[in-house]
Image (cartoon, rainbow, N blue to C red; front, top):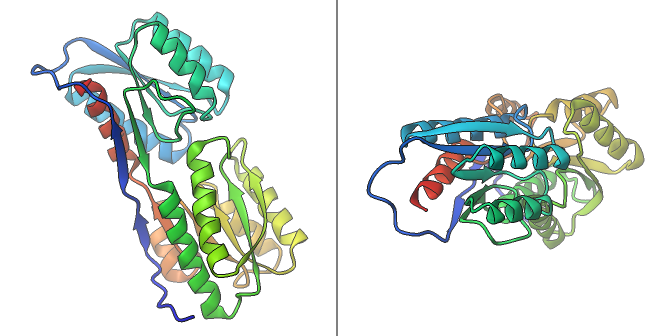
Length: 286
């Protein structure tokens, strides 16, 4: 197979699934929104929160942000607090797609509209769902990785995956898209570990295990981005720098330089700020 390898960022399209009523003529006055976020410490969610805040301020809403620290229990507590405070709408990035069902049910009982911003929900009683095309984005990354492996003559090597939780609809879509690309070219996977606390240590340990347990490992795919250093350190400490490739789904500011230097094959870049703005616009039009 012949490929010209383009080590570039992939900007993933934002898909907006709308179930909206006509927009009101006047801007919202003295209205409040709550944003329920899995973990505000993760750059992706922080950027999304900033997009939500900017658009909410622009449209005249007051905004409260509730971080669950990746715990469904705290997410539920934040939901109850937001409902009790009388918010006019909730923007939800759920900790898990299954956990969103309870949040949506409570909000519906209280008559509060909800917009889902990323991750997805195992229920459809929401106003709108904003997402990136996780399946296609992951498939494209898989194609880029296959090209890189082929270029190096490593098509008989395996690929390890450090995934976001597969109980999230977006995580499942990323895995399916990426695996489809590998399978089409006969590239085998070495295993998959699912992140729970999204820490450096967790990413490092998962990467170390993949390297230790799979002598033929030639690449690690991170379904996130902010803990990439854990994977790079595991590769370096194993003495396999230059022998194991790294590829990520999301992006960090330093990734452009890393792609140019060869430390990173490619990264799929979402648009969390725009997604946050779009979530507020969808709520405003409801």
